[in-house]
Image (cartoon, one colour):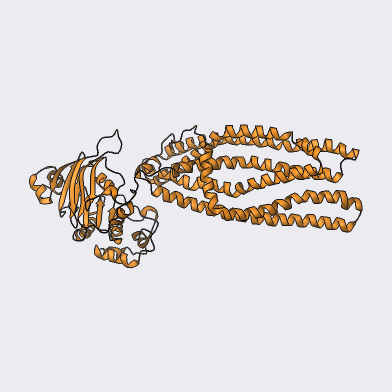
Amino acid sequence: MHDRNGDDGQDPKEKINYRATFRLLLGFILPERRGFAAAFVWLLFSTAFNLLTPIIAKHIFDKAIPSGDTSLLALSAAALFFNSVLFLVTNYFLRMRLVKTGQQIMTDLKKRMLAHMLALDLPFYAEYPVGRLTARVQADTTTLYELFTETTVNIFRDILMFAVTFGIMFYFSPKLTLLLCAAFPVVLVISSIFLRKSSTLFVTVRKLASEITGFLTEHVNAAGLLQAFNRERMTEARLEDINKRKFDTELKAEMMMIVFFMSIIMISPVSIAMILGVGGAWVAEGTLTVGTLVMFILYIDKLFEPVFSVSEHVSIIQRSFAAGHRIQKILERKPAITDPPQPRFLHGIKEGLEFRNVWMRYADDAQWVLKDISFTLPKGRSLAIVGETGGGKTTVTNLLFKFYVPNKGKILIDNTDLAEIGLNSLRTSIGLVQQDIYLFPGTIMQNLKLMDDSIPDAMVHDAIRTVGLEAFFKKHGLNKHITDKGANLSAGEKQVIALARAMVLNQEVLVFDEATSHIDPYTERLINAAMQRLLKQKTMIIIAHRLSTIRNADQILLVSEGEIKEKGTHEELLERGGTYSRFYKLQFGEGAK
């Protein structure tokens, strides 16, 4: 289960790789450049109306009020009102465009992440538990959504607003504007310190948030087990420990954010005091108009709004780059097993398959799982592999499906090395029924189609007839709804559905990996009868502990400690009186044949 320390392979002191993360984010923005361009147009209008307000106010104080012209005053007030309305309207369209564009980016990102993860090899999933991957796909992409909808275009708005505001203020009073410039170096120093200190903290917060999501996913899925062994309090304590670590880290990050924000926000009242003190004296001297002073006071907020906005967005930027950094680590992971430059494609299996002197271990410092395994399986024949748990049986399946590659030796299909065959072509030709059956939430029909609606219903009905399971699917209608992981079905019912599912695509080779384990005698007879039908039509590999399922196999291999200890037909192995014979008699009695 979840590691107590929550180590997901990240250094706790790891810093964000801003350059690589920026390239990643830019790659998401460019395909949606039209959406951002439209947002930018609305941004220009919104900013223009926003900056026009102080100028209208200046006109009111310097022209309309002193003139005593009520019509001019009413017209100026109306202009101020309609300008505010236009600002709200353009700002609405800006926000809506950003939301739509951001949602599209998130949809594309999640699709890309899922496609990438599904292309990765099994060691990747051993390193990253499902709960942690769920957090990366959901929580981290949600954080990036904030960046695209709240920050990306707004940064341009802030730059534009600052530049235009500064230009207008300088135009009307260069001396008063230059007086405000003294605050800018202070802002730069404070921002630089904050960015340098907070980077590691935000990475850690994102890591712990992912850890909590992963912990909850894993332990909720194991709720029955935890209840059976009375481990609820232990689980609560472990979750509390993770939450406390996240709370402490996030509190430290937020306190730093608050100090930064308060330091920045103090610049506004100090600047207003400077404007009122110095500018008020100039108004008294007659060198500055009241309207200009009012306009400057109104523009103070406009001038420092980008600074305040940046300070508010720094938290989002840091969290988003932390999330993007974590997503980048997933996307830069390359699958260990890929297609060769010019892959061969299977157009039907004409001769059969062969394992030739195959050796396999899962790590360089690990023991050999398979040692010099050799066998042939002609087309249309059946091979059974039996032996004790951990003897290497399932590794044969893993190699055949290219989940792993052998360290030594070759696996051949029609005398073509498996290394030269494309993954899609290989896995289209070979079907798999595993011991641990996964069923998706949906109907039985949808699960038989592997949730692929393009598969016609006729193919499903043909598969059911082929294996003689019509009676089973009359009892369990094809429209019956299956809950998450098939929780409303027995183990035997799930394995029957998995057997029929493997037949729907009509693959030439079928592999049954402990397909009759943990089922009742009635279901075992049902599956055995179906498999006997398949023995006459398919090339089959059957990995089994229950020897009743493999008596009619054309060849049986007994694998122990990674080696083939015995091989032959059922009758031949019984006559030899070796390990297979002892296994069989233990299951069915001394007189069994």
